Image 1 (tube, rainbow, N blue to C red):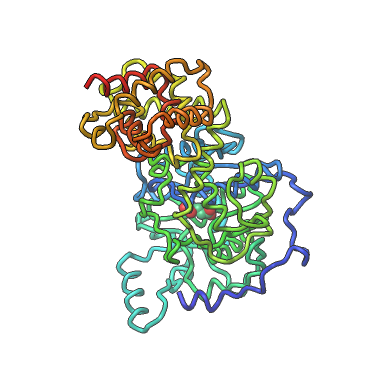
Image 2: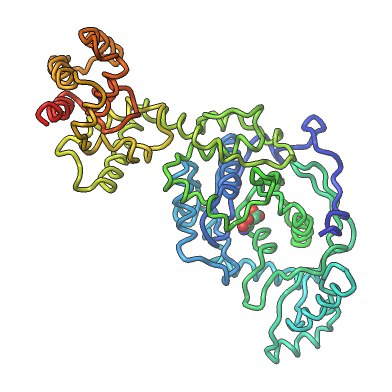
Length: 518
Ligand code: GLU
């Protein structure tokens, strides 16, 4: 690894004014980008960031966003993962224009269905002496590795099969000897420009042996497959994680050997946990599926990944996707590692939830989600009739907006009073004041005549205040405690007036009446 670092030099961070071209042809002409996840599990925040930046880049330049499933490592496939990734992109509001599910002019979009293309490219390379058959056995490779480690060197293949004669090769092929195909890494310095990391000079042949491009099972390795696909899918820009930056030199050599023009590269800086540790693909607290099940909205997740990274003139949350598209500039991406700050997520979610509640068509969707949640959590305990009715749900949402960070908050015990009647013992009320009965019946009379359009919080508050003045022995704060207890069975929570407006006349009167006829 140290060796890799030594041989990679970056000639300063590129500044757009130095003339690095964002497009190889005209501005935005034929922009095509791709997101190429391996279906080895759930999509996580790192993957979502790559997908999002590709999506934004495509939309910004009137291009196409392609989803390509990179499933060439058959041993690591997880059933359902590819479908799950496409579902999540849809959920996040960044669906691909072309994908396995949607199809498109450059399909199939699943690498396991494109094997002939990789084999054809490998054959071309072999014919041009840029690739060769390798018959080295796993035990020989293991021995080489052990030997290198013993000598404190970076293990690398010694390119032995490069030197086999064509007779030797034919003979071994005829004998059916297991083999792979390796790409001949040209000696020397490879130079390429990256929109984020600037000019890179690398000497891949110094760092590693000739890489395998077709494995013993006939499948390509990632390196060949991504070059072949990016070429055949007319990909104009490759935006991917910086972990692929060192491999890019190898890819550039492959493009050259195949006589193809490479795309323009833009590597995204490392995404780290807030503590500075690396994100792990297995870190379940990063899985998008888990966030969505915990009530997080896609907008909040997109905020998290754009606010820790760069590409925008500054950090700000609450951007809509359209705003992201208009404010994004790939040349503003910096090489600093981006730290994911999960702690901001609830606050981001609160704000986006508030926006959704305020938007009447988005609110309808929330109403349905809340109905399903309440039904699931409270089942047969539900308040008859009222609890699941749409108007009621809407009222609750409008009153609680800005106070809740997720819809799930509304089915937690603190909000149970919205769905089930509380059990309150008369003794609890008596402990507060001896005016309990009187207060309850006066509030009933007040609320029975409350305007059917529900009035406002301020109006109800002021009515409650003036009602309290009739009691010399019960302070306002005590009266509120008593009413809160009667209505919700709790000592804390939303204001009494809000509870009353949410619950509605019939339910409020029922609950207070129960306190009178204890
Ligand atoms: N399949 C690679 C991954 O899982 C994609 C790398 C690339 O975008 O070239 O990250």
